[in-house]
Length: 157
Image 1 (cartoon, rainbow, N blue to C red):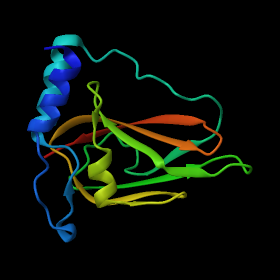
Image 2: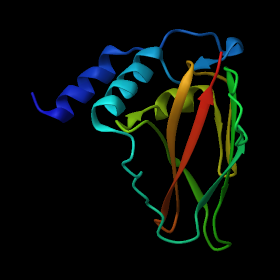
Image 3: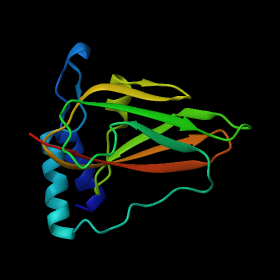
Image 4: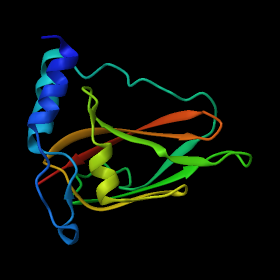
């Protein structure tokens, strides 16, 4: 079994728990967080994230959660603003969320539980287990330009 098949099988085994919209949603399951911790323990976390920035635009600005040295409390409020040049438009269909070094794709779960527009994204009550987490956020515009922004969060008790 090759690595790609193994990873896709892992994702299929980790279903998202059913959560009512008013209660929020599970952004990262404990199973995904554990798979990421094991991968980092085996291979290290020094691998730089791939950059897809081809120009200054488009851009992703993280409004929330704000960067802090203190641990955050789950559930999180995630608010992003998208920007592009005056002659282009953001294409919301290009938005992706990938988790950790293994790049688990959380996009469908986020889209179902957040408001996504050309201006940005708002996700309320995103549950994340304790620990350090890396999300890779991607967006593109109608000029074919794509950018990736890393969001690191540390959730405490």
